[in-house]
Image: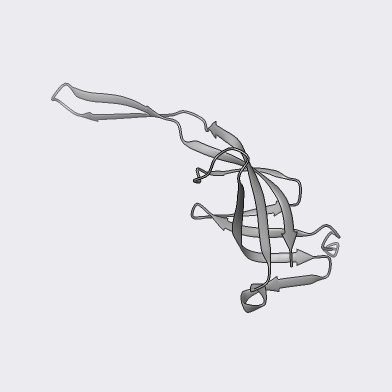
Length: 111
């Protein structure tokens, strides 16, 4: 009825950044919450989970695991339009917001 799920041979990791978790692989470009650092500088992330073929590392076995990346630049997200009003008082306000994001290329994942 259901096909067995197999873990691919490629190494991937789940990192925690910006209050979110993101699944990343080596060579992948990810868009994450804005982080400090200049364009081209090296950053490291805290891995939550590392999968290497058949091995899955989680919890206390992640002490030696590391995920490193390089900041490629910044970008902006989609525009969010907002509107507030109070009835019967002719009080209304429109506003917009665009979130800034960092674009990071994952350079290495070590278990």
